Length: 423
Ligand code: NIG
Ligand code: FE
Image 1 (cartoon, rainbow, N blue to C red):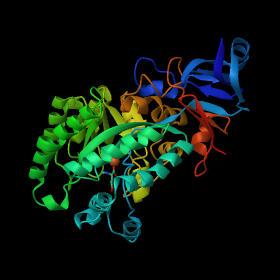
Image 2: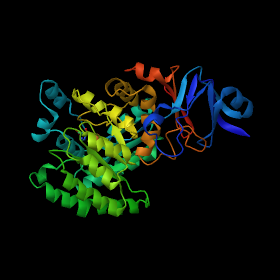
Image 3: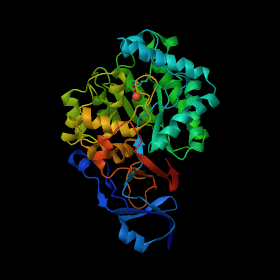
């Protein structure tokens, strides 16, 4: 039998295999490395992974690629982004480095609401074209699956516009996009002082509208995730609970922004509701870390966010992993706290500021991130039958991926079996 593609001659192929669920605790250090490895791809899927000499003997291929001693690993999965927005907030960045805090800027009407105004003013076409460049940069940096949140519309029509923008981008991009409804990203200015009424709107109007919208698009069974920004100045734990319980009753799977600036109890809520992931977790207290580590909920750490804000506190990844938890990494790509498209920098930051090993960070950026967006059985590792999403890096070992930073180490990206040369 002739296969479509055979890539051979890697220094190592990291399979990051984890067939029975996300990697937890010490298992995150096992990358399933195959020295001198090769990957055979057929009809968009991984067919075989193993030593180059065996695969080259076993498979004839329509296309062969010599990896020339590079590193092959699964394409990165970025499980937390706010990629669809219009405009920028470079002026707020300048205010922050001059001493203003993110929350002061938000309380003064800037922050998320600034981007909401710019996003509402943009047409669907403008929004898609502004987002396209960011998505292309993600692919060039090795990301093959991206979760994208709404949350810059904050009324029913505008939130549906953002979901439509994600669908349009999916129609043109080889990257797998996973939508998340984040209607509760901020209390919009027109509801100032009436947060509970805005929560009513989310529960009574927006969530059902999203369900109808998905059904109209023939996407029954594949509702987006539902997320809430649980934070002082955004939504309280009780408001978050109302929204997430209503979403769960409609069939949404859940995510939450918890403990980014203050510990409110959002992580405990995520565990109680069986959320797929709890994200940020910079200030999560030890007892909630213990609960999280014992649960099925995946911790998503976003080290680009404290870095982008110039803060010193990072997610206590060491404590989460050492307690046996499952942790993923993401960029949080957004115009306020972290405009960064590359998972490579997240790995570099995680190893420095969160004391993760390179192997743990790679597991967190691939297989665990795939489980954090509900696609752990389809992407995130190089195992036969999985989608052929993989990257070839110009480095000899996993440690280089953390050790080096600030340049793109990806030479080639394969997405669903399609080859994209990067340099
Ligand atoms: O994850 N925390 C809320 N959302 C983003 C920031 C969004 C923005 O500032 O536009 C975050 O950090
Ligand atoms: Fe976020």
